[in-house]
Image 1 (cartoon, rainbow, N blue to C red):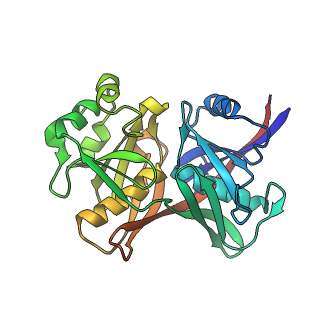
Image 2: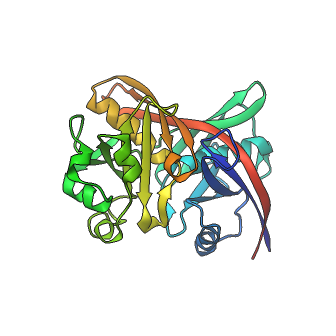
Image 3: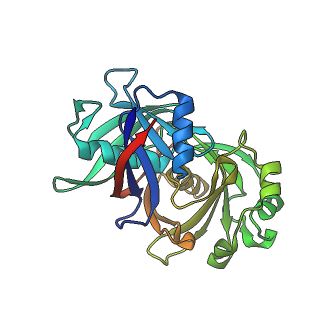
Length: 299
């Protein structure tokens, strides 16, 4: 049995930048154990598997796996998968048309908007499956211990470190300087003790900066999910823009967020939060993609 795959670099306009993703555009016949084994073999932050939708009006069911676990939702896998399927012109034999796709995922429905230059598709933008959810605050000392920092490196004027998410839970902490962000590195024992998989995907650190072509520079560590550091985390940054908008009591906020710079895979994500009538924030994130490889998996 041979299964086709493609890889793309996501949230970048250049090959070998951004966050690499493997896409299996026809995963019919694969079970969960095989999907996990394939994702472990690729050893990328995530691998996606495209299946027929449960509801005919939706575009596809998309399952997302890290090297160690299935994810209910993730950002760069959705952007990259939409890009691959739209460029192919069909999903599981059914032609695609228009500018929008709708994916079924564990966290809910993920609405995708295709980004085009004329008739050429260059990326995609998603609306998170859930509005911004805010969780518990986290002690500064715990963040410092887990990320090789000191408590003085952590900025608390705008918000305390805390859990937040739009389909996945992350811990968010603002840092005081770009130098502190560069110096950060996860520590296995404190991470496993204070930030287990049942609590959060990982820790997302960020600093406000007008340099390096972005408003924000960020880094995300998720070692328990098999992702020591992620070059571009759409599901974290889509919540981050909402968290910042909420902390600044803004009704709308758009940010350019850089990630992956300190690991040699520069990424740029365009994020936006919009307050809806019930006071919660709907959050969006998108960016460009570049095709890299295609081939077959032998099972």
